[in-house]
Length: 99
Image (cartoon, rainbow, N blue to C red):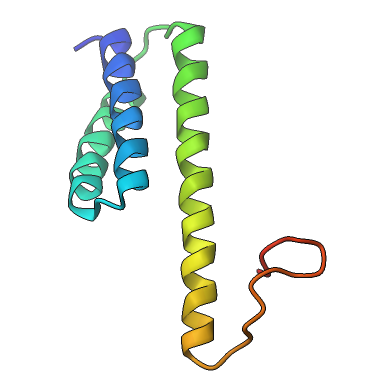
């Protein structure tokens, strides 16, 4: 598999990852992470130039997935805090989640 093919496969996988994140499908996410690791390892060893448009698309999709994961993590932490008897404040006065 050349670099372009690996990057195209990664983009498809990032789209699948987004769907799995939205569906909260942990089993599917685990499978995607394994496949993503393989592709990223392959890409790390490629010496060829990769198409800039595909690189930008992969980066944007990865950032979108990261933002969704961060939001879900913050919400889960807030819920755990409430269950542990911590603050029931979910949003601060500035409208943001406390860190």
